[in-house]
Amino acid sequence: METNNKAYKIGIALSGGGAKGLAHLGALQAINEVGIYPEVISGTSSGAFAGVFYADGHSPKDILSYFQNKAFREFAEFTLPKSGIFKNSRFNNFLSDHLTARTFEELKIPLHIVATDIEFGESHIFSSGELIQAIIASCTVPIVFTPVKIGEHHYVDGGLLKNFPVSIIRKKCDKVIGINVSPLTRSAYKESLKYVAERSFHYMSASNTLLDRNLCDYLIESPNLSKYSMFDLDHTQEIYELGYHMTKNYLVRNQKQMEQDLGITFK
Image 1 (cartoon, rainbow, N blue to C red):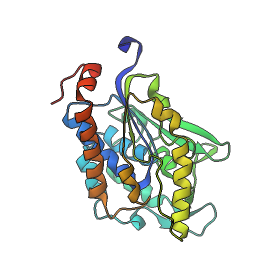
Image 2 (image 1 turned 90 degrees about the vertical axis):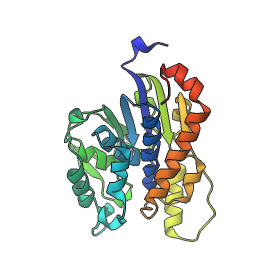
Image 3 (image 1 turned 45 degrees about the horizontal axis):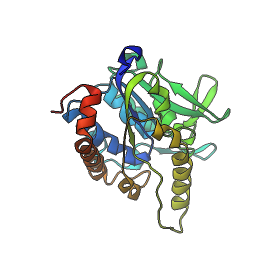
């Protein structure tokens, strides 16, 4: 292994996926239970959201508790539509209330997150400086939320161009664990605007994950998460547990290889 040439031994990449990103918390709980702790994290959209709390020092179960018994309206404030239906001020307040760090440099684990520059059509990686606005930018679903202005640029959801940010830490890590909560799936047609919007965003974001999936040393994903909608906060515990069990099952199947690769013995 070329560990001496890499900054980190183990990195973890967390995909976007709306409320399905709560499965990341179950996945993190499962890998922690066997003694695996990432040294660097990359995340897009809900992956950035889960990643920032974990990197801030919160346990997966504590993070889950912040979302239980919540409704979408508690994270979004309606505004007269110009560039988005909802303002992100309540989302900002939620992050401010629960995060200790205010900059990337204050986090306990290095974090790299992806947002999309909507004017220039480019992915942008945030890994230093002011934290909260960058997280909001990565999670800003176009049309649903108003784009976030940082400096002279306007940013929206990183999933438009890079929903599974494995490549941004690949060269820094000896081994990368990828958690993809939005693999490409089918869904029976429903005659509703919500269905068409969600499926369109799903296909767009899933289609840009193919290269990054191949860059993982260990890829953990499940099509069973597809039954949950982008803004489903009514099944937080179920989504968490699905993420936990899909990861535990993967770890059991791949224990021997991972122990050998990582130089550890599972707890």
